[in-house]
Image 1 (cartoon, rainbow, N blue to C red):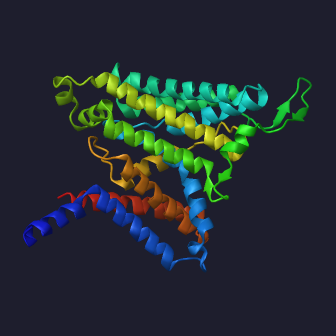
Image 2 (image 1 turned 180 degrees about the vertical axis):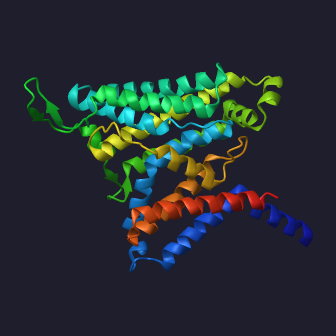
Length: 334
């Protein structure tokens, strides 16, 4: 192979979304090495806890990756987290449902929420921003109505107004546990399973090819015989399903169902997808990029946390870094 060909291949690789996402992650890790908080960054517990903390956002990002590749957006995922956290806690703690039945009910609720958003986009041709914004408000209101505006915990209110404390169901402890000698959180395993399922759909199934086609050019996909409406509907349905999974994990981590859970989670999940390099214009991206984006955001948050950076400064710095990363990605495409 000629040196000029090798040089051109190297340039193409550097310009690829994967290379840019990997470079961003490496830069953040280097910051952690420099600002290591007296060696705290070198401890395994720091990396383990980082991955656990980012896992719920990563689960949401898996669903959003499919929706964004299909040319859409979903702002309702955070509200669906809150709704399913409330439903799961109420069904298991207050109603005494078996864990399998409660999980199935929550997954159906998340799927219904996603399909509702997808139906508004696919059938009624509403802008994804408007359709999912409406679902975001509706799901949050439903969560507050179901819970009576209160957190659903092991304190169960009786008819006389007194509270009786019940034992937390075993499923909460199972989802909130660590395995492999306390080195890996169960919620992190759930995140990895969601990554694998999403990768399988996008890379191996015909529907995955349809998702890329619809996101790349919806009209051309329609003329080519791609079932555009069904593809969009299923993309939003999968996103709602993953939102329900994230809601179950959120409830287990907090040992309660909070109707305010998941507020602004959609912004972090979208940031993960964008930081990974998946195009907001649709048609390009992948779940491998989403994993890199999740690690980048996770390490950034953890480095700022162990260095005792205040929440206000952390939010502002994270926002600036996301903007710089997106500008860098756009610049390298030219």
